[in-house]
Length: 230
View 1 (cartoon, one colour):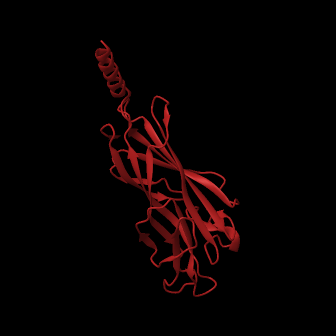
View 2 (cartoon, rainbow, N blue to C red):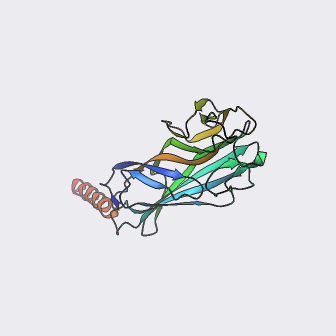
View 3 (tube, rainbow, N blue to C red):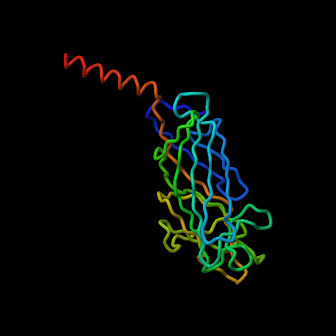
């Protein structure tokens, strides 16, 4: 499990955020932490949400690794609807062209929407998670016409039009943004296109002070005030 000193902050990665994948946790929160990916109702809608939930966390020093953190993402498409059902059910595309992949002018926009922390005693805390940003993406089917890998994708942050060009099937980049739009930068034939295999995101998770410690601090402060009044 992950246990932090009171008030500490832990930065970690969640890889494999995508259809049919559970998400792999690495970095400071990697030891013993499990991740579950869930999505409902993405297909056929112009926009929807999906979640990643981390469990086996010890964030309040109470109980034994019984805390969880959940992160909600948004997904929206232009030129069709987000489509996660393909030959193997593990990739994102856009349903507008009938092939379930991304071709110009189709785009997918991913956004970080919200987070929550639930402690083992049932208390829920919000606002204690910092989303650092998307910092990785895996593509598939970059070459759909049987030629050498010659396709490319483009990214934009903040939900704008795609700008930066990526040409590798797997890319790592630094981006401090809650929104990422993915589109086609160029295509050498009408059959060219790609699908989004998975994302990697980074978070900062803040430790929650133990209730007993907070209570002691409050009581000691009250005692000091009473002494001064005497």
